[in-house]
Length: 157
Image (cartoon, rainbow, N blue to C red; front, side, top):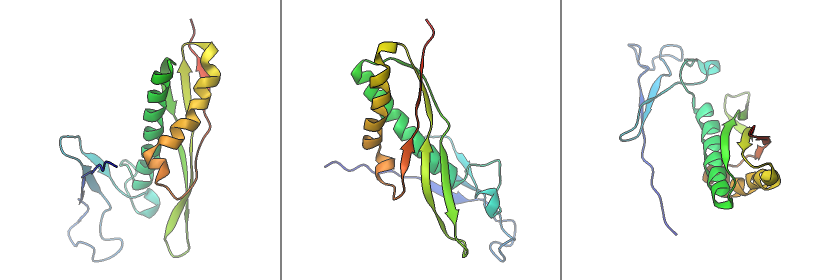
């Protein structure tokens, strides 16, 4: 088995002068970085005093699942000779917060809209979503259901 290692740097940038002297005294802003890549501006969800203009960890988790599924799906289509000309996913995640403030994701639903060139391969194209799900590293690591509701379109000739 091969191991892969991933390194990121998360730096809190929300010290508004008094650090964490009180719950409302500090910002939730932070940056997420990896060597040689653009900085991702992060914060907490606005429900938790975060900046709505920045990505929050929950959005990044949903995006990671969506991206991983897409990359596997495109790979499997290429291997199967299915020409994908467009792919967009409007993924949704559901997190439940408990009374004491903790919580967890209950589900993520991927909703990819895929356009292919050959209408005779529609059945195979739809079936490959299940195979992509089985390969997705991120989905295989989650303790909640990750499902998919794909929509298939045929490119206009």
